[in-house]
Figure 1 (cartoon, rainbow, N blue to C red):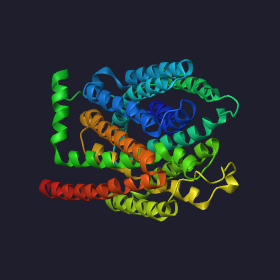
Figure 2: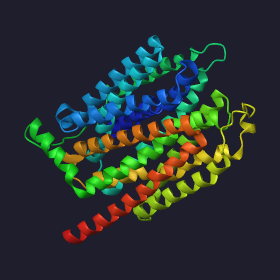
Figure 3: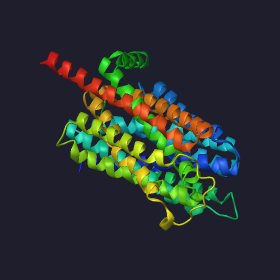
Amino acid sequence: MKNTGIKISLFLNYFVFAILLNSVGIVIAKSINVYGVSESQASVLEAFKDLPIAIISFIVASFLPRFGYKKAMLTGLVIVFLGCLFMIFGNTFFSTKILFMSIGVSFALIKLSVYSLIGIITNSKKEHSSLMSSIEGFFMVGIAFAYFLFPAFYSETDENAWLNVYYVLLVIIALAFVFLLFSKVEYTVDAIGSNLKEDLAQSLKLIIVPLVLVFLASAFFFVMIEQGIMTWLPRFNEKIFRFDEVLATQMAVIFALSLAVGRFIAGYLTKRMSWVFLVIVCVVISGGILLAVLPQLKVDGDTLVEIKSLGDVPILGFVLPLIGLFIAPIYPLLNSTVLSSLKKSLHSPMSGLIIIFSALGGTLGSRIVGELFESIGGANAFYFLLIPMFLLIVFVLLIDRISKKQTAVDS
């Protein structure tokens, strides 16, 4: 089958970075417990992850086709390999900042390459949407794996034992590097300009297109929701439900698995209904879950007995992370819709814009939830997520309206 090797490489690379990128919530909780930092101080790790993603995406997106997607992914794997080594031997809160900076830089290269290659190796909008949803779904499988992998190295007698997880990650990164190195990449893509300066100029012109602007705003608000929950759910479980450290992290896997299932299902549902209708229904149900659960968690659970067994977990501890099932389809549908509507030479710069706005949304969402978590408590902090949910519905309706007008003009 054509391009089978590179498709497997895309899945494998995304799996590796799913573990690394979304371990931020786990490392935030560890930083608070081991390095003694506050919630607001720990929340800066999201910025150390996301701002490099935004900056690198802006710098390299326009000329990445000239550099080569395979070279970019190999470079990203080398950088994050070094970041993990620094974390092992540094073992300070400063080390976590360097680690997530390296993850951010690397992931920008990986995600730009993956998103661009999806457009190159698929031949239709349906095929594009299907592969995009599958890869994003597999990304969530990687996140779920992280929630089992990290607690496996926790120790009640050695607070530094958790760092051994990075030796495992070094092995996985090395395997991903070797597999990609020997994978055949069968594609050709034209740069959008005749030189680097023209490439950048053509890329920047995308941002003034109304439909693109609205899509970017939608991506911004979605990631604000997703990262606000994902980053702080382990700490939420520990602080509000009073799960012990291991159980708090393991219970967060429900959210990741819900996201994975939701994204795989999305590939099926989009063939049978409007993506706009699907997104709006999913957002409304997600908001409904928050409004149903949060009022029952009015105070932090500091006075409650610590829960160490899965059998003692209250029903609300299972219900809240199921919100992932409903927010899951949104991101890949937004991305696939805008990318498949552009010519393939614009996929890299458009991916860069999506990644930039997604990173900014993730940083802002996590930072706000972190500040609110510390000042008004975790149960109340999650109410903030209702605001970007409402704005996301507004912008999705705008997308639909602009798209219909554009179709009418074109016809």
